[in-house]
Image (cartoon, rainbow, N blue to C red; front, side, top):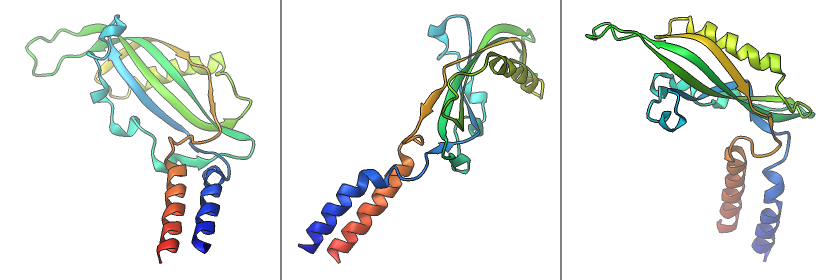
Length: 184
């Protein structure tokens, strides 16, 4: 009987144990979500240049997980960038013609911030254009010019902001310890 009461109590507390404390968030994590070229969105997947983006720029890391402060939430927004890109030929290629194309990049910006932050200020979104142009000047195989950016609405998250990983870990630990108690 003692085991049934213990299991019932554990199961009734599970929802509260997985959301206790402040929200956890990938803080100061900017990832590249797309990099392609062409004027037809239907061809962007075929023209993907994501293979030239390093893996460290494609995903947040566990080192970037932070517990947001009391008056903060986990915030994110997307940045879409469009620019003219000049693709230089490989040094050993027969055709040494530089190809100019319309390039597109997508980013997701994640951070802990005030719950009142609902829109990216226009001047901040424009700063992304300058930043991208400067980054591509640092040894990229592409020459970039005329960068234009747009930012999405800010998305606010107040629970399960890491995709369920943190809550699942706490839940599994609790279930395993309860089962061990019941069996032994």
